[in-house]
Image (tube, rainbow, N blue to C red; front, side, top):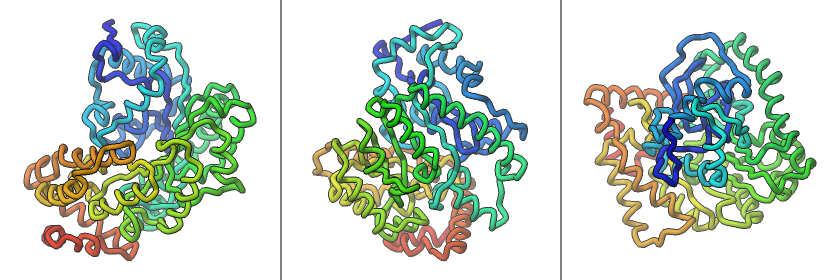
Length: 436
């Protein structure tokens, strides 16, 4: 088997399949949260290819780790092949600074070990040390670009509207819950107790609402290896105290290193429109409290996902970064389908470029640093991917605009909001929207 290490020119290699395990709230195993794998059981939040069948095929981590699927992945990555599962990183679909970079940096010292401990058929003796288990979709927000798989509030809203997905059916829910309780929690807890965890990635749903988060983090402290564990978070930061514990005073202060990517897509009213459930002033107060605990810039970061309405608040987001003196990350909602109306790429190219160029012009003299680099690169990235009117033929594009606008208006009606109040900031954009 051909083996090419990253330092020998392998551009597609990623340490995730040797170190990392991911499971969705619907208990689907994937390479990581960014991987684009064809759905086996359900229609996934990022993969619209749909289920092959309705039979649940839930695997334990032991069954999955050296399965034929995982072994094939490792063989291809060691030989430098580009695989479709990794398209998000290979083609920078969501952001310019891709997830692969994290794994290859964090586990750089184990790259040689990965090659040495992997057979020609892809079987490895390396064990999982990085855990991203989405124990449930429990979340108090119904963010516009999210949906039921990652938000219980979305699930409740859709049920009330008579919209359900296969995994929301009672019998399937019961099967999932049983596997969760008997297998998923068990294998995760064993890793904590065995002190084999090097990294947690707490992401949801809203992970701070999960009891298991608090018990696992406390147990790591009790077992005496908190100084060896890196705790990453993606949190809406709406609350930082649950179950009588404060995230900073009672938990993270005990760990050597941690990182929180605080999800925020716009400030003030636009932010509250995008992230339904957000109370911006309370969020900002929590962020100022969190700011007191950081020892280096990357511990607390603003995790911006650029949306269509969020385009009109990019300058305020940049000023927020300056105010809090923390890095501003930048990714975007990608148009995986022509009706993805929350994507900035839903806009016609001429309108998107006009908005982005205005922001670029304002900050053209800004010196790049750890605080603004991802954002400034993200502005360029917005102009490097085709918009709907470039990606699809005229008929598909226009139908996508109509369908997307219809979805937006339906949700606005449910929630008593109106996107046109935001789009009116740019009369030309409002005119385009109205004309759809």
